Length: 248
Image (cartoon, rainbow, N blue to C red):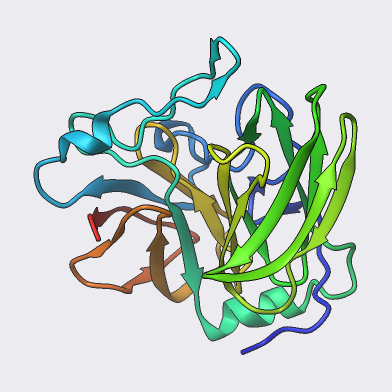
């Protein structure tokens, strides 16, 4: 179902979605132990022994400096940066009900020649505001698969607001000048979503009672086992649930 001109508030389903310029990633959910009593929560793990390549720290080189490492998985198989969504007819209706509110905008900064954060979640109709805190010229190139969607050169201090449109799915972002820079925009058709933290944990709050399909997406991995998972939310609560990913 394609949604047209969907608008909504900065805070949705109890998951704070605001600008991120250093510090904690606002789209990463709270730890389950800190979650509200009424919530859907769980963990994202790897299906089987974790391959060594996923444990390696990835760094982007800027001059003689090394940017902070990004780890795909922990030794005990917890997966970070997975996007978890709850889908249903009621969820689509809830998303449509937000059409009278301002569109959700998520900030992605270019700092130290990396995207911060490098994975963001935006519902259809929303937008991403790209910033450039570096003192050098960057380029933001948005692609869907092999097709170019849009791009913009961004000088130091520059800003570009990119509308994600009405088509759900994954968009890749990169810099034509600095090929190590990589990120993703996950466009979703639900107001109920979260992103797993560095221990694979996620929480989605404010979910109405009902039956939902749980989907998990990751930029480098694919789902394992039953997908999508069906859950029943009762008294605003479901979980803990475990979602599994594997290599492509």
